[in-house]
Length: 347
Image (cartoon, helix red, strand yellow):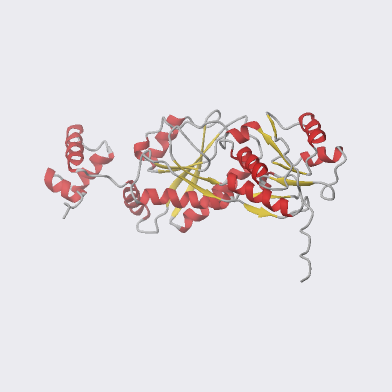
């Protein structure tokens, strides 16, 4: 049988020290003589001891609360990014609400921190989290490529709530944009639309590794009866870019994040939904009632909290050797911008 894992008690017996002294030394407490602390850490490393930060936080909280119920803390880290669309703030709020609700079910709470530009520096965030014993980082989506590599990740477990993060490479949870758009396109095809058109902001698709565009082109290529319309990808949404494309290629339904496109369609003579349709790629960002995709940010937040807490419970701090991605498909929302489904013929 394998030897039992070393504990604070067994280390203390080997070192001839009290359990409290060993614990303080491993936590870096200034109350322990530096030479003693160095000896404790050396013996602990040789023995293969792994400190469980969740257990340490539990005991600390129990001492402060005198035995009341423990609620651990997860840090929801957002980025202050001047170029990020204002509408993204609603998506982030829903993510945090979902994470907070599920974390509360599991005995944790979520606190929000903002880094970059007018927020905290990464170094300052590291100092705050370590001083407060917060070891779980719930990282909100970034408009640009996020960089939290300066954090001392040996203290933290992390989850990123979007597609690939590289600095550092963490586990991720995100919407299944590819599968969700394919499902939406199949749905509108059953309503009789044959010339779907995709209207995207370039950076929005780039940061998702072109999943919107890839799903759209795949559907056009493989779905019989669909007449191809080239997607319109722009740096910024504008009427000047949209109207010439709409008039030239004549899509009978437009899929986009920008519901202002409905006005531009109607300025070209379209009547929504009588002659043309519109599908929002994120109904949380809509400015009017419309059909489209609910990317389920609350469910994403809840799942992210579950994955993060599971890492803490397994004592899995640090950058994972094999980062994984968990995806959740969007939910379809009916709305007044598509014609209704024709009734089935009587049998």
